[in-house]
Amino acid sequence: MKNFDYRDNELCCEGVRIEEIAKKVGTPLYLYSQKALVDNYKAFDKAFKEIDHLICYSCKVNSNLSICKVLKEEGAGADVVSGGELYKALKVGVDPKKIVFSGVGKTREEIKYALKNNILMLNVESILELELTDEIAGRLKKKAPVALRINPDIDPNTHPHISTGLAKSKFGIEISRAKEGYKKAKELENIEVLGIHMHIGSQITELEPFVNSLGKIVELIKELEKERIRLKYLDIGGGLGISYKKGEKAPTPKEFAERLLPLIKELKCKIILEPGRAIVGDAGILVTKVLYVKKTEEKSFVIVDAAMNDLIRPSLYNAYHEIIPIKKLRTLPRGPRVPSGREANSPSGISSPLGTRGELSLGDLESPRDERRTTVDVVGPVCESGDYFAKDRELAEVKSGDLLAILDAGAYGFSMSSNYNARPKVAEILVEKDKFCIIRKRENYEDLIRGEQEE
Image (tube, rainbow, N blue to C red; front, side, top):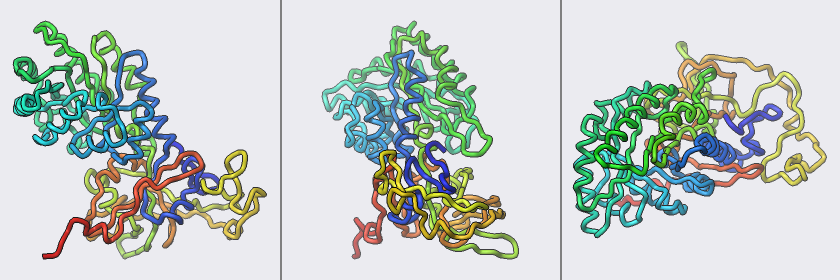
């Protein structure tokens, strides 16, 4: 995890103690490091600096306005897949000419909304969608800028639910019909053919599927040029994975670029990238509190106040997330406490909670405990057997009231959350250096019934 580390055995995000945030905001909560977001974005930008490129952040991964704004201010565009995501991107000031609209099921209203806002292009996924876009553009007296999403039929070697580039996938136009699609687009009066798009899946940790897919697309571009169909943009999608487990190694943006650049740098196309998880995934955690430790004859359960409605990835994908204590148990007395962001007043940006002299608080004098580990299931309060974050996981022994961090939860965490079991959605917090701010308020019970009415 970037910019999350232990100081004096207490987990911090940048310069802020996470326990202090939890005390003020409550749990569960999502917590993001702004520096990690920016550093991850810059890693992509630097990796592709030798070619003309545009990074369109994949908003579906985490569409919080503050997250999108931080990246917009670094120069990012937006990859959106719904009218709502387009609205949010425009709301934070993303340049419409840096927005691409993907998705297999765009509605008439969404296509109209995109065209009225003059976005860079629609990534069209079928001939029927192409014809509908032409009709809507004609009514608006506009030329619709489009790319065709081509399905290269490559196995990305990821979870089936997030694999999108196989022939049996619902996404895109099969590569065998690509020329037909482009010829049709060229014939339509209200369509301006600008580019070609591919996206083969998510959480891909091997580079070979990207290389093989891109190789097919590059050959197609050359064939289209022979047909006098010249493209301005090559959108290579996103999907680069991150390392969720210890010992798991995902490619870096630099390694990603090194494999792809030889294939594309001679093309006369501007390259569009749509990273999401690789920007925000390891920049966020889910903080949760232990409610009970329950032991049966068969198992031990750590029951926490977060649940599958807050982070559904373990239940939906059997996804692995590392879980660590906010406070480490220790065998030596603690040193001076790390301050919260609101307490930092010294020239160095760090001060003691009791002033600038570094005195210890009463909590710093408690007797140390040896760390003991035990095998448990970490589960939530939702009434489903699938409500879990870890099964048969060896963790440091915990007790009621302890705080845990579920790591690498910045991507597809809050964005996939729900109000199942009538549970209010959690707060989201952004940390910048020694300060934090609430970027989404915790919902309350009244929020649960907003829009409902009794007959």
